[in-house]
Structure formats: structure tokens, C-alpha cells
Length: 417
Image (cartoon, rainbow, N blue to C red; front, side, top):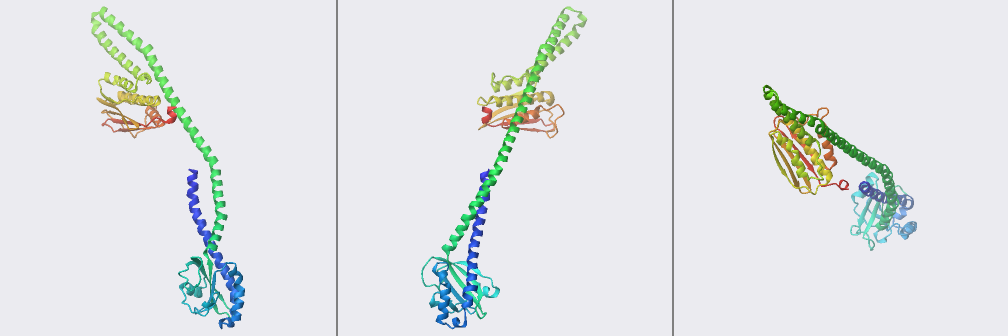
């Protein structure tokens, strides 16, 4: 991510530096030309030069020859306000009258020089060959008598571009180094933050697992106490009542029979609750068989349970346990609160995900309402399915039943380990 940010920042900065350095190189050429016009050309433009005096022309040639000889300036022309060439280092151009371009007219009117790239085809006044493109600089100055002058200087574009490249080589590495240093400076806190976030996620996962394990242990404890104490005592009481019904007072037989029947029904209910509370070991029984066992208490209550369970042997033990716990929580809620006549339990495989749908035709509830205090089982299950890489959606309205959709993706790498 840091590398992407570096590239995103570096590209526009690079274009900006390129444009700025090019403008600087062109402005530097204009500055050189302006100084050349003010201090070398202007003072030597006298009446003798205007009259075409060879000696005056030779003096100006000598003055400009160092710039032309070292290649700093390729061509130079001096025009008066009427467009007449009063001097050029190409002698055949002296005396010609040229049509002033808009840039020259603007220069005379506003005094602002200009710098442009010109191809040799556009410079029809040049006689010899050379590079295909030149940098044309127009500046204004004044002659010895104070008359306005137009000085046109032409630079080899390769020299200007070389200066442009030197500027880029001087600036770009420093900018890139600064950006890299900035990224490195941000890398350390970013890594620390990522580790803290990862650590918090690990702690959250451990706390969630502890909560689920604690809930499971409490369910098993309650199931054991119900089985070993309450159910055993009630079963013994039922046998005692049956014996009393057979050998006791005949006048009490009807009462004892009704009481024993009610007691036996309660024992069956408690045993169903015990089976639901005690988690089946999904590793010993496959997920489909475990889910079928969860529906038995509902069937004992007379609920029509319709199951369509696909084979899911490739699920990890963690994912199987999560699906089992979710199904158990959902079916227990249906048993306690829904007053449903029919329940559909569907488990399907779709590509690389597992989908479990539980639908009942019970009284429903407001799915947007907050759970009552102490009723946090489904909330814990939502966190568990999220940690396992899945999602859960609960759709319910009062009087219209409830539909719960659980989607679980492929096993995560860390979960598989």
C-alpha cells in the first residue's frame, strides 16, 4: 500500500518538476538574450550601423562572436520597429524587411518577451542546415539613440533540453529520496499499528472462543445436573406413583394416573432439553447426523420438521462446530418462543461456500429490536460466524415467522491450521 501511495504521489510530482524545469530552462534562455540585447547589442546600434556601415557591423560581429562561436547562440537578428533587419550574423539577411508576427507586435506594445520552440521549416529566413528544432527568443531593447529594437535569438534546442535534463537530474533524485524517506518514516508506525490491530483481533478471537467454551461448559453442567439429579428423582417418583397406583387406594387411582402421566411427560421434556443442551461431538458424528439429532426435541413437541441436508464432509471441525452451535441456538429459540407448526432446515453447498437456512412459520418477532438482557446466545453466535469467515442474516416480522440464513465461506488458512 505504501508503494502504491509513493507511485501515486511521485507521478504527478515528476510531471510538475518536468514542467517547472523546462520553464526554468526557457526563462534562462530569455534572460541570457535580454542581457545580450541590453549590454552587447543595444549600445552598438548606432546611426552608422543603421546606415549599413561595414565597420559598425564588424564591431557588433566581434561583440557577439564569443556566444556564436561556443554554440550558445545559433542565430541572432536585430530588427527595428518597422520589421527591417538592421543586423544579423547571417549577412544576407541584413536590410530585408520582414512582416512582424503577433509576438513581435506584442513585444513592441507591451514589452513582454517570448520563448517558443520553432521548426526549421518555419524559420524560412535561415539559410543553412542544423538541428530540426530551435528555441526562438524575442526580447525588446533600445539602440544607442533610444529607438526600440527587436532582438531575435535562436538557440539549439538540444542545448536547452540538456539544461532541462540537468535540472531534472538535480531535482528528481532529491524529491524521490525525500518521498522514500517519508514512506520509511511512516512504515514503522504503520507496522506497529498493523501488529496492534492483529493482536486485538487475536485477543478478540480468543475471548470469543472462551465465551463459547464457557457457554458450552455451562450447558454440559446443567445437562449433567438435570440427568443425574432432577430427571433421576422425577423418574423414581414416577415409578413410585405407578406402584402406588397399582397397590394403593382404588379411589386415588385416577388422580395418581393423571399425575404420573404429567410427570412422565415432563421427564421426556427434560430429557429432550438435556440432549439439546449437551453438544454432540461433531468429530464423532458427521454434521448432517448431528443436525438431525437437534430436530428431535421439536419433533417430540409435534412440530413438522423438514430437513434437506447436503454432505459437508470437507468442512473444517471449527466450521462444523459453528454451524452446529448456530443450528442448536436457532432450533432452541424456535422450541421456546416461536409456537411454530412447521420448520424447514436446509443445508446446501454453493461453489466454495456452505449455506444453512432455517425457516419456521411461528409468531415471529421484531428483528430490529435489541435482545433482552440475558438473551445473548444469538449475538455470540453472530460473532462466532463472523470470526469463522461467514455471515448470518435474520429476517422476521411479527406474525410472519422467522427465516435465518447462515453463509460460510471456504475454510480460512489460519483456521485450517
